[in-house]
Image (cartoon, rainbow, N blue to C red; front, side, top):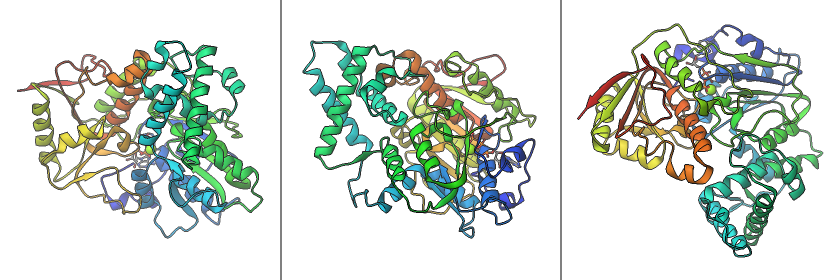
Length: 476
Ligand SMILES: Nc1ncnc2c1ncn2[C@@H]1O[C@H](COP(=O)(O)OP(=O)(O)OP(=O)(O)O)[C@@H](O)[C@H]1O
Ligand SMILES: [Mg+2]
């Protein structure tokens, strides 16, 4: 959705294009899944569908929960759904889950959810504990991320007993795990949960969904929401979707909008088997955001082997007609030269355009904008109103998800960092390529009009190098 602000483009005046009406005004009595590639208007449709379902003239209207991925998007969606409409609430899943558990007296005032950094330490300790009970094996030497991720996947799937874990196909997970390794993982999970319980912390960000679902199963109070609309649904776990389904009133619905090319959490998760009553999946391919030149890079990326490894539910992007300048690929002599080049372009363009400086990690982002003034950080709390004025934003690829900028600048796209070495250690080459490839895809597709990628050394193999895709430049 637009970061650049033209108030005239408020959603009230947006007219559905192409087949968007099919999803927006789909039966208010039925669940819907709409899959579309980047820029096809999923967020636009999600907001318009929420409005449709909340409108008193709709035959099955009622309070709507509009769930999105992070606080930056919450801020953005609130900007699109002005506060006047008290029948639509915009929240992240985490906020909804905490609020619900609080309402049934199951959310401690503090320390209710184990935060990511602490979780990693706890899982590392659990791995060491279990390792001590085994003969030496390299399995336990895998990067802690692997175990963190596997435990998250178990929770995301709603798996709560070891036999179910042994029996479930690990779709989309490329590091195979035989039975004895799965048993070892289960022991790590048990040790981790025990340690967390000893600290009095009932949840983490993954297993909180099961707690919500269990709470709702035993909750006879009337449900707050008649409908739930989910944007960026590809990153919501099956267990979270099940819990949202359980949260709607009888006769209410779930509307799911997502793009599996942009799945950057929870590899291999799917909307299938989440209890949605789907009669049709609507597919969207017409890109209303990117110029043809930028879309060409994105389309070439989506065709690369690491992006098509799990083809289910991937929608093929189509090239838009709006033309523009060719994306620039700039080779710099070193890291410092990349920063200088990125800052030069940002200062040059930031007066009249919305510029996004996007990197893989926060330290990289901080380095890219060091010394710059009046730059706006993307990760922010959800309460500050959206500021749509031109200027320079900066953040990680994750934090830019769902947003859009006139100009996107992507420094540090070198082979050494992409795929990231630690990600390779944790998940293996193939999986790491898929994960970082999807992140790069998210970043590239944020650009409405101009895209510049810089690197020093060798360019990452995760970007396509086809003839005619890039304008090649060199700065010293
Ligand atoms: N019906 C429409 N009329 C005018 N503009 C539209 C329409 N639908 C989408 N757009 C514009 O196209 C751009 C992309 O829309 P949107 O952000 O909703 O796409 P998306 O599918 O959610 O993208 P992403 O996958 O990146 O989240 C935005 O600038 C939006 O305003
Ligand atoms: Mg979107």
